[in-house]
Length: 445
Image 1: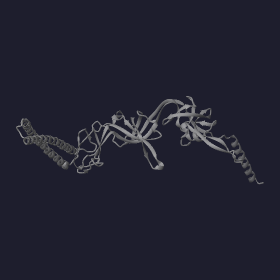
Image 2 (image 1 turned 30 degrees about the horizontal axis):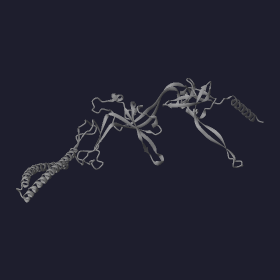
Image 3 (image 1 turned 90 degrees about the vertical axis):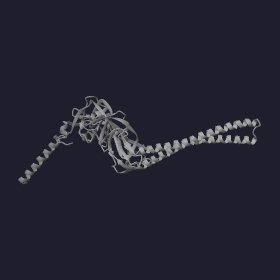
Image 4 (image 1 turned 90 degrees about the horizontal axis):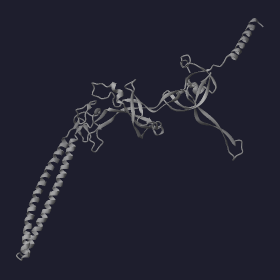
């Protein structure tokens, strides 16, 4: 055997011995974890939703009569007061209708006067014929007048009586006619007044949909043209859609934190003032989402600093701005741990099924079913972790309430989540490190 071959064999033998020694002496790398102690903390459970800012009082203005807009003295964004002129529709046709109604009323008024005079004439005729009839009756009873003369006197009396009653009815009829034409005048006057539109509330014109000279459609028989929207910006709400899974957690009066996209970095406070009863179903039949509208009133005191004192607009917000609301639905101060420290484990249970009706080898079969998942945390002690069953309550963005299984001061594994959820097991040895080391560039978990 040559020297070269001898040296090679010696080197290989040494290498093998070195590998065996390293394998025997080396220890498996331990999972690195960070810990945090269970402690009593204040937890605010929230429901988050997004929506639009709207004025609590928002009035849509539509004309009641159709026609051309001949006067529009306001513009979008202008502050208006109750009773201020907003718009005027050309009144020509309605003005002529009003004039006709007034003329008809005056004619009927003259008719009432005429029938009243005719009633007086009928009353005078009736009184005269009544006197003649009474005298002729006395003469007839004394055999002075013939029966024919007395019958003529009585007929004249009855005719005067009937004429008097007819005159009274004419007066009544003409009086009702006068009331009818008076109502027509009132109707025509009201219709004429509808050509002029005044502001029903104080507010800001948040939307103006027409221009001077356009024709608008009235609401008397049709839907009508929406000409503008007036919003009271002294009271602003955020209308958000809350999923059906969270709606029962919200109650009237819940405080809320509001963030408006147009005011980044600023947080405003609000209160839940209204919870919708009717569901808003969106999406297709196969993928429907059921939401409920919740109104959150923005606290004016939280945006006072943003007000421009020289502006007439009473609010820095504009209707339609996008906002995100965190509704604080529940509050507690109790034992808690970081949310990521809690993991679930599926419990496999073997169930033996048997069928007495057969006698084959398949009589008995084993099936594994999954019991409801349970929640666990891993308690760190002396280099090992212990899997502990816990029950949890409410949670916020960072911590979750622990109702049972832990005590104040227990050191639990809080990171990394991948190890907590998949790697760690009961009585497993781990290496405790600082949390910053876990997520350093050289040690990513």
